[in-house]
Image 1 (cartoon, rainbow, N blue to C red):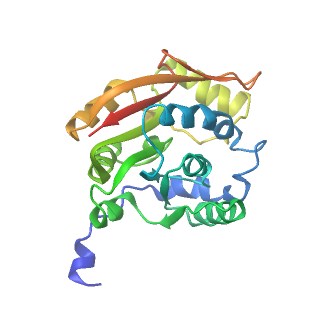
Image 2: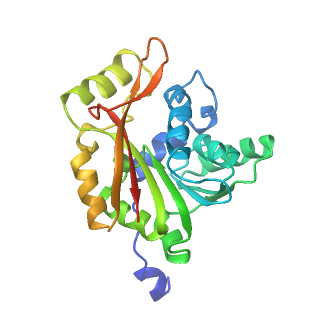
Image 3: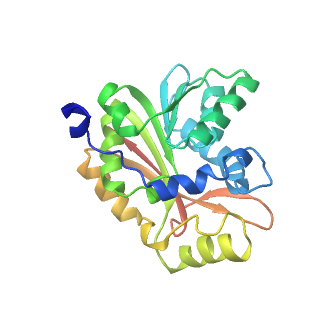
Amino acid sequence: MSGAAAARPASNADAAELAKFESVAGRFWDPAGEFRPLHLLNPVRSAYIAGRAALAGARVLDVGCGGGLLAESLARAGGQVTAIDLAPGMIEVARLHAREGGLPIDYRLVSAEDLARSEPGGFTVITCMEMLEHVPEPAAMLGTLAALLAPGGSLFVSTLNRNLRSFLMAIVGGEYLLRLIPRGTHEYERLIRPAELAGWARAARLSLQGMSGIELNPFTSEVRLTSDLAVNYLAHFTR
């Protein structure tokens, strides 16, 4: 290994977390499968982003893109989308699905840290959905996302709050009782309080523009934005 390669910092990723998602990549686009909640949430998330950032012609980056659900929505809204993930199976599924739909999305198996070194400030809109709670150093990831964002650009993040209600609803209810998502998807200690997220963003010189809760009714499949940030929430930052 060369000295330069040895000095390169490791990516902010957890191999065990990647393995969880890699194992179910082939079922990503099944709207009734393990990723059903993402399929239900995606229209609301997409509308939230489109209502706060100009997507047509913009360079858009989706970090932790999985099988490409949000990336495809952003591309259909006119964004020039690059989407990255470190799970090879997810990237393969995403590429195949985009090809079937004729969507010119640039999918890359690359870390956000490597991309920030090669394309600093290269993206006008960045999205990072349900990923921060799966990385070893979420505060450092906010810094990496800020480095990728162009001045005046918008960063959109979604994650889960850390409190008793989110534990009962997202983990006990969502994973064990209703089985909306696979058991073990989330670890309570890794969940992120809004104040923590805002603090990390300030340290990365990002400005908070707003936060909204997302409420999913598992019995009616209805999803709506709310002012309640107690469980799942979206945040909009600008640089």
